[in-house]
Length: 188
Image 1 (cartoon, rainbow, N blue to C red):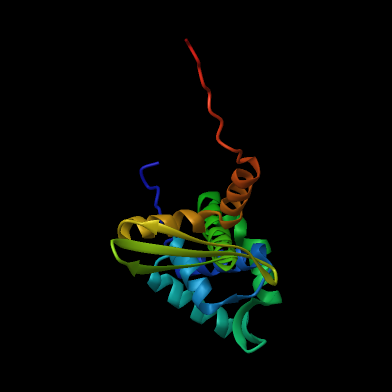
Image 2: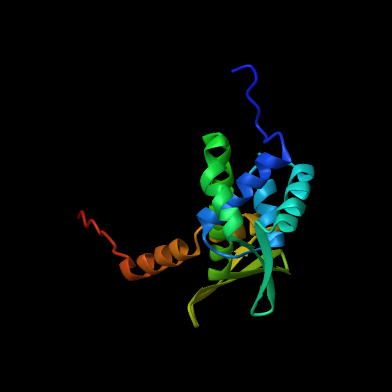
């Protein structure tokens, strides 16, 4: 295992990997999203990515298509066939890393669309305003105090990890909240 590499070592391998990822995602992806996913996978470097994308577009394996005014990279039949035939030549480690980066990217986009969070400075700290959303309406609006910007940023990051879970925990707490009970021991 002395020759194990952590990065794909040719534009050819990157082309196959991009086709494989687009095939598995089965959805259009913007060029910016594809670039971010590729680099976040930590197995594709910028130079091979640039060369691979140029060759994929030139060969017709992928194309650019406008959908509702947004331009997407779409896997074409030629790219599909390449993915099906050649993906076994790309080690499992690389395929797994690329897919993991893609799924993590789209999960992050989904989470970010579920919550709108802003931080504003207030006297003696910051206010973290959070709106947890569902399709067509706001589920919850909450404002939290943080003593400084660093802690406000941490609160924002933690909520964005799982906005629906945050909402669920707040609702569960509210529904289970009870009046404070006092135990009085009268010893005379």
